Length: 560
Image (cartoon, rainbow, N blue to C red; front, side, top):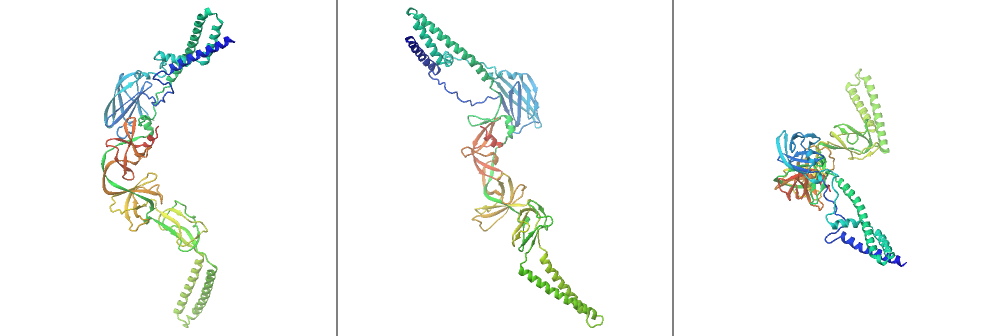
């Protein structure tokens, strides 16, 4: 029992001695072996770029080939109708077109080094020569050939070995060594201690060797997983890296900015209204019951012509009206019978000269008048009122149902001409000089407007102003909200850019993306002033002569 107790004490002592050594080696002075920092730089294939006043070129080395992308320098549009000849270390090679890019075989690109390349671009605009230097790093010889990382110092090697040593193994070894020391004789104590040290060292070496066998394949496999693929990403400095293939997929387009003079613009709220000369209402003049024509009521969007019958209104008759009409019909029938008898008597007396022919003719005229009055009275009871289209156009509103009672002056149909529309805006100040006007809908449709006039009476403390849409009004509807931009005579100076190029940043500030290099874009905070329906004026934060993204800026802003 005493031997077992002493062995346990020795095992605990050995664990206490090796444990601090292990922690001290793993975290020595000046180092903290905690969780590794996150990887922020994603590897990309070796690349180089060159530019001139006409073209911008990017060359990418991958798998023993060079992929060449050529765009217009100002607009960033892909150029595909050209011929490219590349001066390489292996001699001049003509590039072949592959989709929107060009490729050349370059087996020398698998070896690390710095290579000077000369590109001769021949197109319709002439010949352009671009030069660049392609640097192939040593780590990109081939994927999966990276050697396992070896410890640089003895302390690092010891930390690897001790990091895989199991504390339970140390306790077991210490316990066995304690039993061995207690059983041996006193004169053999030193030899036993040496044997124990040998056993402990062998265990450490065995464990560290097994760990090395497991670490090396992991290191090699992790190195083999490093891929040379390119994808858009936001860099630590806030700029956005977008490879050329991604730019073409997103259709990124740019313009070169320049400063010029412009006139001040006033924004007015407005809405679309029909042209008063090309629209109209169909209303009932009397109260009556609606009934459809032979072809039925016209539906929404149906095109009609002026004079087309759209509906009928049959006036309802009350009991008193019906009785009165019947009384009048009886009186007319009685008068007709009397006149008919008088005419018959006159016809017998006219040959003898007892009655003048003039009296016979007057009696016949009187009979015809009575019959017309009788027929008109019948038509009032039978024939409804026809509702006809006042103008040619499209049915924009329908309030007709068979059997419905239409009130006088009720709007049954609204007819408009979709090709002739106006915009009614509200101005809170008098517009004395209107040089030019434009509009913009919520769906970013730009409208060209022509000033027609403004009212002299206020409407909700604002002055109504009318504009005619001179461009194509396709897609507009009556009552649609429109923002009207009216240019006054005040002069302003700045950079005019399309509205699509200005975005709202995370802090609410307006930003535009500048095309800094071939594959890098930076956000610039700017101060803008409304200019017209399609443009804004950059009054600060950007200088002239910069390439600004005007198409695809929203997609660039979403890259993370």
